[in-house]
Image (cartoon, rainbow, N blue to C red; front, side, top):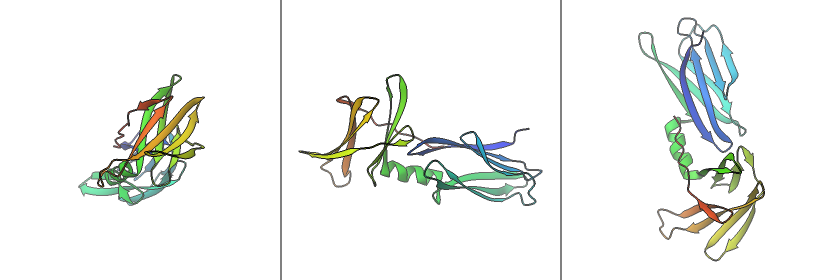
Length: 182
């Protein structure tokens, strides 16, 4: 019997992780499944409300599911990531990370730039990169399956917008992907 009451997608540098939560409102059972792998199981819980804390992804990002009674036997489930609601975490992440999704040699490829560390990830793995100063900014070079890639960082010329990052694969600019967590 399956008591899944909530499912969330959490976009991190190493990929988009699926978090599922089962809550048995009669037994108090709590099960947390991340990317199809059960990581917490509590079969009998006297207290039906509370919090389950766990980690997501290779970087072991801290997450918590809050279980709150709304009325009678109705419950509300919220996911926190790094101490923030999933919505706030996603908004903050969109400021600190750039994401591109494309197909290279027939393979779905997700490239992430962590703007604060300048780390570049490809399908969940950190890439070796080489930085280079160019006339109008910087370029961070790397390779994906024998394809020359670089992320170009240039000033937007507007203080509010700051630095603009663009991905180039084999000389072609790739449009940014906007990921929504939910």
